[in-house]
Image 1 (spheres, rainbow, N blue to C red):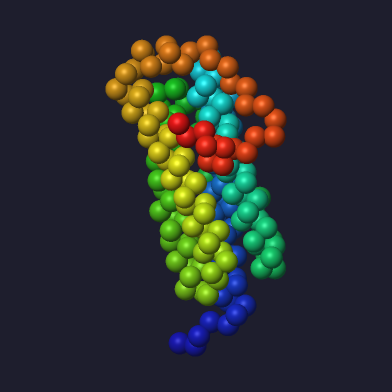
Image 2 (image 1 turned 60 degrees about the vertical axis):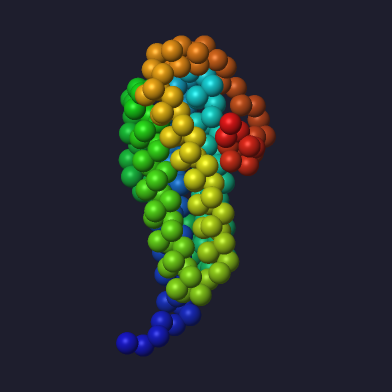
Length: 179
């Protein structure tokens, strides 16, 4: 079997970057839907954090798109999956935890494709984003645990909190909002 050409290697990297971008676009839509619903349910503090995480995902989607363009590709605008709508507060955070866990697993595989195709720049992009996805996973796991262990007492404490995140936010991972 012949060694892949530079063009084939570049196309392999563009392919996984577009898969990752589609996953980010789906996450953005999912998290914004949850943000609106949590805010509507009067869980503003949770809504605000989910919005910040969606902003992180927007930044990730943009990072992938910029790298795709640098490599001569066309960034996808397709979502990897459909948005799950109408979730209640008890199901959102375990759902999101699973989504982030699946994303980390996929991105580790995509990182290896980039490494095998000799693209250390894209490897670094995936490493950075995987670190931020882990921050999201930890937050979602933490909130899911609070809801499971403390139930209505925890939710009552959150109810009625404001969701305003303001303009010009850096997102969740960058702003240090993990606490």
